[in-house]
Image (cartoon, rainbow, N blue to C red):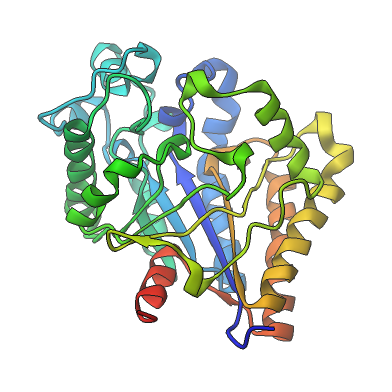
Length: 328
C-alpha cells in the first residue's frame, strides 16, 4: 500500500449552449440551460461545505455580457470546419440574437472565482474541436491565446489548466499548451472505449459500452498514482476516472449501481494512494437539480469518510500538476 494519500479531484466543463449546439436545440434543452445558475450555486455551496477543490474549465465565450461584446473580441485566425455544426464562430456571426442566459455567464464565473479552492481553467475560447476536419494548429493557438487573455482581462485569472472540448485531445497541440503557460489537461480514461475520436469516428458499440461502464465495472477503476502521471512537453495529463452521468428517469432504477461504481473506485484510490478524477458539465445538473445535488452530496460525503480513514485529499487539477512537478 502506498504511503502517499490518495487524491480526489473534480473537473467541470462549463460551456452552456456552446457545448450543446451541435447536439440539441435550445428549445429542447432550455430547462437544463435555465437551471444551470442554480445548479452552479448549489455545487459551490456543497464544495464549500465539504472542502472540495474543483477545476472549472470554462468556455471563453461565457465571459462576455452579450453577443456584441463577444464579437468585438474574436481572434484574428478562425477555424474553418468541414462540418458547419461545429463552427461556433459561424453560429455567433450569423445568429441575429443570442439568448444571454444560454450563452453568457460573467456573474457565475465571478462567483466561482470568489469561492475558496475553485480553479478557473479553460475549455478553449470557442469550445474548439481539436480533431474535426478544417481546424489547424494556428487557429487553435489563436483560440487558446484569446481564451487566456480574456480570463486575465475579465477576471484577473492566470489560467494554467485546460480541458479539451469533447475530450478531443490532439497530441500535436500539447507543445502549444506549454508555450502559453498551460501545465495540465484532462486526458481520457486509459481504455479503448474512451479513446479520442472525432464525430464521424464515434461508434455505437463504444457508446453502449460507456453507458454500461457507468453502472458495472467493465473498464476498470481508472485511478493512477501521482508519480505515474504522464508529463509530456512539460504538461501533465491528469486522466479522467469517471463521467458523472446526470439523473435519468428512464434509468432511475440503476442510480444505486451508479453510486456504488463511483464509491468503490474512490475507495480503491484512497487505499492505494492514487488519484480519482470525476467530471461532468454544470448544465447536466440544470434539470432534476435536487436529485443531482443529492447524489453529488453522497459522493462528497464518501470522500469525507475516505479523508478520515485514509487521509485522502481534495485537490484541483492545477494543484495536482504543481505536486507532480515537485516530484521531478
